[in-house]
Image 1 (spheres, chains in turn brown, purple, orange, blue):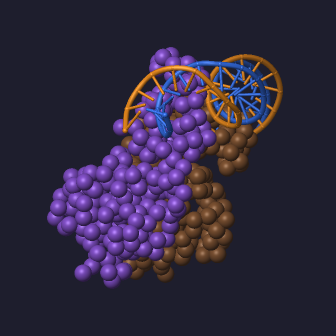
Image 2: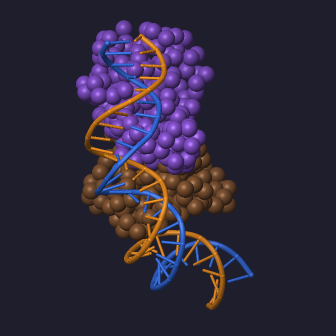
Image 3: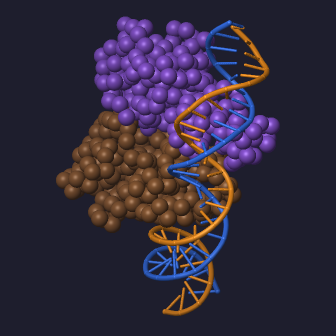
Length: 199
Length: 199
DNA sequence: CGAAAACATCCGTATTTTCCACAAATTTCA
DNA sequence: TGAAATTTGTGGAAAATACGGATGTTTTCG
């Protein structure tokens, strides 16, 4: 029985490439590649994948939110998070969101394949151990909000995208400003990028 | 004679995937995949590639800076820029940097392959035409204002620092927003950093 | 286990800042 | 001289931010 893998990423080109790489492995079967949230739930129900390889940024939202949702709705699915860089904030958030592995796009294919196999065995694989000592200054939700701010979104747009109220977004924004020690959202974006908070 | 392609991207995993996809084509030959600046010049000299497929963000810096350098040092090499999204500003910047094509990672493999072939024929392929009419790059003053915005300054603080009136700053800000095609200063900072407008 | 801390969610009011649409004068430079 | 950049303005709408407070959950830790 092959390990059924579902790919989730905004980027068609990247997904097709990874699909190609994974399909060279005899024990892996890519059952789908989705780039829209509606497709996501449908494909999971349809194919019952063992592993979901998900980009940490999916459709503007934080992929970790999807990870949480999937972990509760489909406990059999194990999520492997794909990120652009190794970033403590994100690794920690991914771990706490219930992901089974965290792989950077800077890593080799072998790393990803190894992570998929280990996750399938039920073993979580994260790059380092010191991740979990180093506490993340921003919460998962705050990071999600911050990314959307950097993407030119207003608080109302953010509230719609994250399905929370405008007030809640405002609260998160004020927490972000306090934690990053800035007074404007533009300053927060500047500092966040300096600190490498975005994967 | 095959078209010799060199891939340039921070992300090993993505590059390997694209390499697989390109090597299915009989007229393409991937002569290398580099993820470090020193390798880049060496590989170009070594393999004399016809086409360089380069991520718009390379090693934290702006891939377009490399594009300019390559275009002047190795005029025979044609650069195809890979970006995360379709964005007029990026496309225009790529065009002005001397790139032959602009492809988003959201596009299909076929789009990339087509762009490579067209570039090799000496034909520049950019998604739309209206790109080059409407815009101009940021002026020095606008850049100065933008940098201060990223440094968490308000318009009044900026006006004091630059010895101009609040109104003038507001005008510059609105020019910046128009030119970068964003609606907020936070979005402007996000886009400016992605475009490599700051060091 | 139980207390304390942190987090996420919501609401109101008030002030500040940002942003837009209209013009227009001055300098700079090709 | 004409084009572009820089400068300044008015007025107003929209958004963001600061200042309160409230409730329930989860995490952390003694």
